[in-house]
Amino acid sequence: MAWMQAGEPNPQSGTRTMRYCVVPPDLAPALHALLKRRFVADPNVEVVIEARDHVRRQLADRRASATSTQTPDAPSPDRRRIRAQDGRRAGERRAALLDVDPLPLPRKASHFAARLKFFERLEPSGQQREDLDTARLVARIQSGESDSFPLLYLRYFDRVYTYLVIALT
Image (cartoon, rainbow, N blue to C red; front, side, top):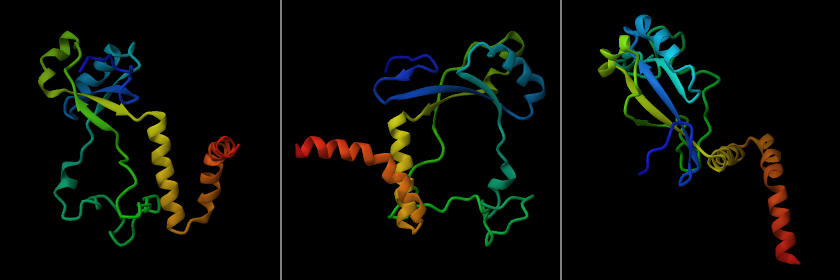
């Protein structure tokens, strides 16, 4: 596979990449600002602080958190319940991450290089995003949300109409 610069589109999959430098929380006070200044000129590199809650991973019910006031019986109203016909999600909500080689670091940060993680995030192409959104609309319609049908109808009206004009003339 040929090497691509961060942010360049991949002609094979139609995706573009975003690179992240993940800083552990204990190193954030010393390195976050330094690394942000280092990569400020590159809009395709973002420095983020790792925010995993390891305590949450130890809970029997991972949907609950130690500070949450919600119970498992009362999920957040924002939580999506839209699923495909076979019960699985229509698509992943998180983008795919690939481990990549580290970027050149400032001298002050170089001795922490082993603890820093670098990832590339693969952004879906426009067609992939549209297909995923359409699958979600179809799942909503199948679950009884009739307000979603006009959106689906308008999205595909021109394409279906043009096809029918060509096919029937």
